[in-house]
Length: 212
Image 1 (cartoon, rainbow, N blue to C red):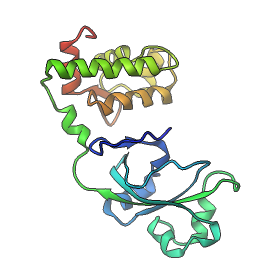
Image 2: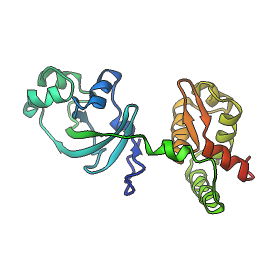
Image 3: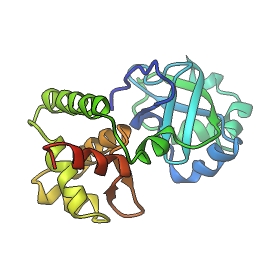
Image 4: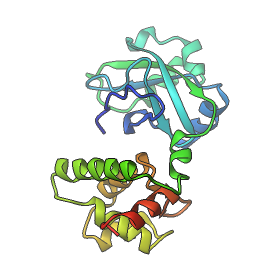
């Protein structure tokens, strides 16, 4: 997923490049994991920017390229591995790709999207701004308008698996999930243990607009 620069740090970017395997998530959350190594063709994280992960928001402190032989055991332990050799052995991607060392720290506090999603009352200006934001998402899509029908299917089928929702719309699961994440970034949907539901903000928007 392309990393988008986000100057308003209240709303961090969700980047697939900065996701963590389940085995590292406790460490990210409790602060014992503060380094990660990735093989990237190009830089996918920016120092000073914040990114959402399944265990909360992290802020990147530094990003640099490091040779495999220069990875220290200390950094390896900070990344959740017992040794530098274990880091190198587990890196994904081909050997010709540069290795990026990303130093980061977890950000305490609730996800700002949660407060946004809880807004049950929208002003006329907020509705108009959501109209504009959703229209831009539709316009930039390579497969046509999708926001209205996606909101509608989530409203009608809360708690249904993403794959089943995608199939009902004739779409592939992963691109569909990526689109739902864009709606979540606007505070319109909430992720459940299985599937999604429309948030209070999302329902207020549906109630206030012809999209309903």
